[in-house]
Amino acid sequence: MSSILQPFTVSEGPCETARPGCHGTPRGGTRSLAAAASAGRSKVTHPGKAILAGGIAGGIEICITFPTEYVKTQLQLDERANPPRYQGIGHCVKLTVQDHGVKGLYRGLSSLVYGSIPKSAVRFGMFEFLSNFARSTTGKLDAKASVLCGLGAGVAEAVLIVCPMETIKVKFIHDQASSAPKYRGFFHGVREIIREQGLRGTYQGLTATVLKQGSNQAIRFFVMTSLRNWYLGDDPQREMNPFITGIFGATAGAASVFGNTPLDVIKTRMQGLESHKYKSTLDCANQILRNEGPLAFYKGTVPRLGRVCLDVAIVFVIYEEVVKVLNRVWKTT
Image (cartoon, rainbow, N blue to C red; front, side, top):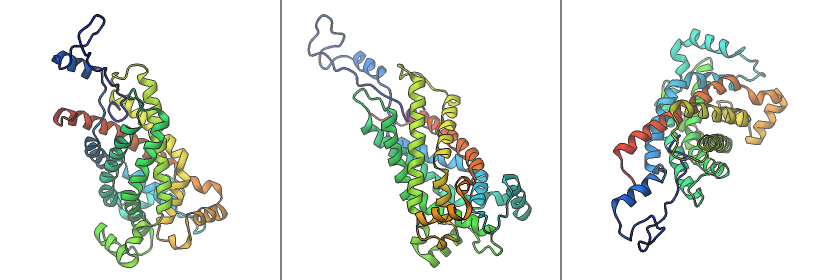
């Protein structure tokens, strides 16, 4: 992650006059001073580049990892009280392919493709924007500051993008599991949801989504920043190859899964076709605990772990590589 969390240092200004011990040049000096200053400063990603690179990374990532998201959502919606239809990950995949073919594992993909591009764009753009204000006087972004920047990025993406798109995705996946599916496609499904429930119908589980996304990004950027600062040590110019970035990203993703899967389960239930059973986010949590026990808050953890680790690793790697390309063709100060 050579750009998203790259610390930078502010170079010393030129000397007023040339004098012994001064290694600068007089005011208005030569190009060598500018070159030296530039060499001593680590680049900070422009928010515009972050938005574009984040959108590209998000679109590619979701096309790769969606089947794991599908299985995770089905297991979370499979309540014990029904009783459960699926006996595990393999059984869920088997029944889905048996009933709908391999393409069944991609039901709801369109809603996430339409959502993942702007979601990642908002996430990285907001993080870069906030982190530019949170850096120390030496230009370094510490782990504590990254928590707040990540939290802000997560809340922004939750309100603007994630909640409506996740609600639509969950309804589509839940609809496919019903005996008589009624949604014929993305646009038909969205039209039906809005016709029946209004725009409010696409914002079910907003509180849970804000809590989930905010904690997600706070955890991920905290872990990523901590690992990055440890790896770079006292050399902010040290290069991080994609393999290292991927490992750090996967670690950050795993930390977020274990840290907030209960919120993800609650969010999924609040956005499902049976969300009318819950009066509020707290009531949903109480009903899950009372009817299914505490372990129900970790339903879908394994498929989510695989999906999120791959997701975060891919997104950060692609993001970094796209930023490198943009830095060559889009010059910013």
